[in-house]
Length: 369
Length: 232
Image (cartoon, helix red, strand yellow):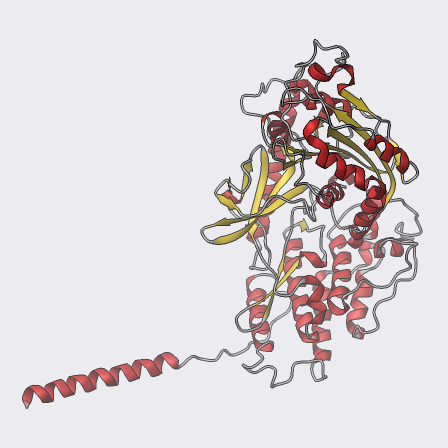
C-alpha cells in the first residue's frame, strides 16, 4: 500500500486506524470533493494472483471470499432498498471492492454536529423526535429481515441542517445479519459488550439460544435511556459489567429518575430478560407518541415562540418525520404541517416587468420626440 | 419459566502477547520504548480494555529477539517462555533488558523464521475467550526463508517456503497452527517485500508502515498500546 495514495477510486486522506474496530481498519477518503469512510476488512483475504487454485487452502480461501461478498452485497443492497436517508451504508457496485487483497466498503463520511454523548443536552422535545426517527429507521431495517446487532449511542450521527433542525443517521451495519441466516458461533457475532442483550451474552458462552431482532430492541432501550439522561441505567458494579449481565442474573437495575414515566415504562419493557417479552418497534414508536403528547403543554415542550423562524425546531422536525413516514414504515400517521409559500419570486418578477415596460415607454417617447 | 435468568458466565479475555523484536544494531529506539514501558504494560492494557468495556482476566507476554543466522549464528533467534503479568513483570523487564541491539549483518533479517517461531508459541488453549497476538517490530525487510540454512544453529523445523509459513498461520476456512478466531498479527515493519505480501494476503493482519533503518523511532508506546488494545 502506498500510504495516503489511491484506494480504488478514492484518495486516502488519513492513515488506516483500528480505533473502535476489532475486525477492520478504516481511514478517511475523498472522491469528487466528497468525504468517505473507507473500511478495510481484515478477513477474508483473496488468494494471490496466479495462486494454484487446485490447492485446498486456496480453494477454501476463494470460497470464503465468495460467501463474504455475497453476504455483504445482500446486506448493503437490502439496506439501500429500505433507506429513507437515515441509514448510512455503502451503496452501489463501486462501494464494495477489493484493494490489496482485502475487501473494502465505502460509505459517506459524516461528522456529527452533536456528539453522541451530547444528545442528552438537547431539549426534551428534540430528544424524543430523534428517538422516533431512530425507531423508524431501525424498524425499516428489521422489516427487511436484518438485525443491526451493534445498536449503540456511538452509532448515531446527529447533524443540524441550515434551519437548525437536527437529523439523525444510523451507521455501521457491518455486524448485521439476516434473521434467516443468524450467526452460528460466538466468534462470528460482534457488538459492543455494554449493549449486549441477555440472550446475546448467553450465546457468547455457547448456550443454544436463538438470536432475533429483539436483541436490537434491548440495545435500543439502553440507547433511549442514554439519549435522555446521558448514562446507562444504574446496576450493581463491579459485580456486573454491563446492564445485560445484571438483568440476566436478576440484579436490580434502576432507570434514571429524570425519565418521564411513559418513557421509563417502555424502556423497562425493552430491557426484559426474555426477548419475547420485549415490545415491537411499532409499540415503542406509539409510546414515544405518548411521551410527546405528555411533553406537549408542559414546560418541556417547545413554546410557540420557539417554533417560530427564530428557533425553528418543531416544524422542521415534523416535516422531516412526515417525509420519513411517507417513504417507509407507516407506523403511525403524521400530522400534516402546511408549508409556507415563498412569494419572493413573484415580487422580483413583477418588479422586473415594471422596469422593462417603463424602459420601453421611455424609449418610445424619445423616438417620437 | 424463562431460561434467561440467574446465570453466571465469564466474558473475560485471556490475552497472550508475543513480542517479536528485531534486535539488530539500528533497533535501539524501539527496544528502549519496550524496556521503559514493560513495567506498565499490564496496567496500561487493562486500563485501555476497561475503557472499551472489556476485562482482561489473564495476560501473558513472551519475547522473541531475532537477527540473522548467517551473521549471528545459533543465537540469531532467542525467545523466552510466556510470563504472567503482573506477577512476573520483573522477569519481563530483565528479559527485555537483556536484549542488545547489535549484529544483523546485511540489511534484511531472518524475520520470517522468527514469525514461524512465534506462531508455534505455547498459546493458552483454555475454554474462555482468548486473544493470541503476535506483535513484530522491525525496520528491515525479511530474507527469503532458508537464507541462513547453511549457518550453524539454523532451526530444522523452520518452514521451507512462504506457502508453508502461510499455512501455519492459516485462514478462517483452512485453520493453521493458531486459533482461527483468537489470532492477530500486528506488524510494525517496512511496507515492502515479504512484509507487504503478508499484509496483503494474511487474514487478521495489520501493518503499520515503518521507515527502513530508523529503529521505529516514530512508533510511540501509545500507538503500540492502542494497536494491541484495538486488536483484543
